[in-house]
Length: 151
Picture: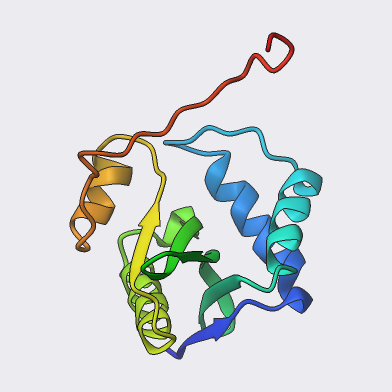
């Protein structure tokens, strides 16, 4: 069994898209991604100069991806994990933990001072990150406004 972690590259975009759609259209997210919308999201992010993404392969089979953006803050460069998924049939086999460790190591080498993310509440999501050293912010919340036609 040969495990490899590589930087995400545009040549593998269709493979990343297939994985993304299959994972996020399933539990616990139950999203409604199409291949087209997912590919647009992934490609748009990959083409920014602040993008960092890693992919994990086992015997040349894609098992998971993680990516996000570097952001300059007053106290250094922070990193927002924007997406992280492991093939549903391959979860709980250590691929995610290995991938997250590799990303953290690369970010540390690059001098990144903080990693943050937005995720759903619950053991399968929030609990996963807590087990890997993340904490739930006591002073930050996420807010949204879906009524843009009513300023």
